[in-house]
Length: 306
Image 1 (cartoon, rainbow, N blue to C red):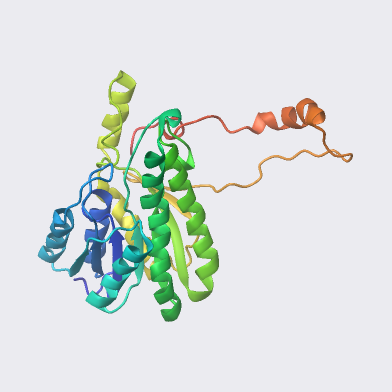
Image 2 (image 1 turned 60 degrees about the horizontal axis):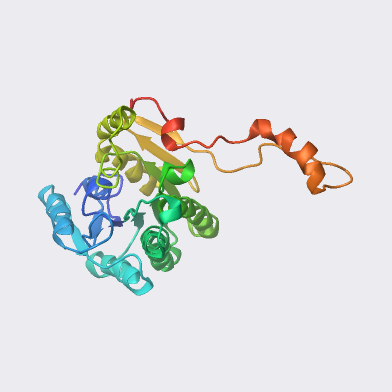
């Protein structure tokens, strides 16, 4: 462990740390001195099965590099099991200082074919899981008057994407959750921020690559390795980010982005009030010039990774 690292003496819970972005964040935090709870149940991309092997592999990598890690194979998607994840940090290392909500699954399907299971399974892991783990840690953060949350959102929620109503809704919900945590917990010196990661991992490996345009997009994404997201997560978890709260960032190859958050962009008024007819004749035409296009992430951020 790095005695002069940015996270020396801290204990971090990283969910979904058995591979991909979560693994790279866990390793990077360990290299900066943190003791890590590797929380991963080892399910498939769609949330099926379960294995302790991915978490064990991450733990071994951390220990081989001189760090300390514990494994927790409890699910984030239930209240009691999420509390056991945080308890693992207390039992193993005596405290908890950082929560990285990274665990996730995908059930991509076009909206009119999406089943109840497709919806609830994704919401349970991403949105409910982020709340459950964050809420379990909040009691300890409040008592010690310190703590940092790093939540993974996605441009699928921030901007939009095809066939991901469940995932997009969860990921945009996480942004609102993070902002609420930031507002409620700031008095206890607790911060909450989001990262929209760009990386080729199992979460993006299901992107179709049939047309020339799709193949070109996948080739661009494959250049962006998961480890490129780790430095930002480490920074946000550290005291160096003590003035950074309630923000939404993205890490893309060697680029960092700060995302806007919804604010009024145009207004129109009539002193006598509105009728459906005057909205059609006056109100909506006055605002149409400021409408947001029906874009997807690839339309808005379409240049090659830098």
